[in-house]
Length: 549
Image 1 (tube, one colour):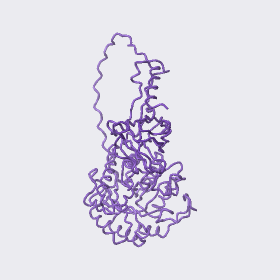
Image 2: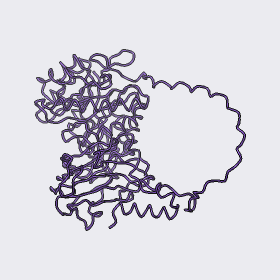
Image 3: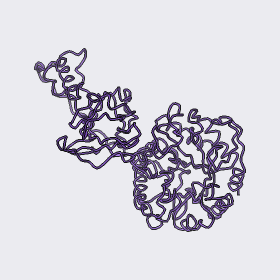
């Protein structure tokens, strides 16, 4: 098996034969997009987004001769992963030949690992199918990475355990996308390196008149009459009227696992129309769902049912854009909170549901796609988990602040005014906002940041969860509803009543037939529910009542 250096030499020799010796230096394959090197570590163009403890501190096993290496620890379905930072991930696949890296292990073994962009078996590219206690050069052609002629959708390169059990460590270094050699000219003929014949100098033309100065750069897009803003502890329309929207959680075309094989945009639109036209909602929380294979936190293994897939692809984001466009165009009184929802693994969040490099990159993509709509808000995550004692509050805050900063950076690039961005409670599945009372978000000056709680709690907890925080912070109740023993129907009714009295926006959970607590009767015969009669449950009627009060 040829190493990637051998392939590079052969390619360079081939170009020398076609293009002539003088072109040899320019024709060699170049490390055009470095990802990780022994000398400098990670390239500034990438960020680590490894998951499930798939990466240990950089080191090198003594048996492979020193130097810096990334350490991949193949825990069950754990992964070493680098994300290409936005907007550098829009790579031109026509410029690259493949992914190259060096690999070693402490002892010889056959790793059960997938690697690349879409995931190919690593051992197919190792000598004898094994990693060894000495560096071996690995080269995976771009075609094998299943990226096609364009890398525009590439956001990460990963190495992931595929065995479901712990394996030996792997060491990687000199990871890069290798550039193709330059073209030699028409017909592959040799380049003419002789100097051109001398010609008599031509008369110098008169100097052109000076160019007029360039027009001033257009200012950023001004806020629209539908762009909300925060002031003090409230959320306001541009005319000064306080926004106190009431509504429901609605779903993307994947619809809470129910429509993974159907993914119907028209059905999602029909339910938006029902929420606004029938129930009277003025505020929608549109929850976004993604599924990748080998997600240990997805007990239903949603990815296996997806048609064609459930990635955060450009096609999926185009579907979300159409839903947001449709909702705002048809219902001008409505605001739409687009919220990253399930699953934490598939969106690139931490295991505890905090923002991370992967989810922040997807958030940038959403801003890029949806930012033209003034009625759209951006929800950073769904629910930061656990942390009931607040010991990790500062870490959650730091992740949230970074996510808001990314939104503001993307808006600045696009010349957009700042949209509302919601950050979720730092504790106990987004319940507690207490840390923000003395530590509000600072990114973008804290402008147009709203604090979101999911108070699935009894009435006795409401003062701490949202009544007292609302005296200081602009906040919303992003989810509420009767759930097991944590919140009864009476508690949920009291929450809607209290929020209405305080002019706090809220969206109840959920306008669905199998994502409890359900507002719709299940008339789908166990299916997706495309075209089924939309009839409210008792919970749905109660929500409709408080929307209208």
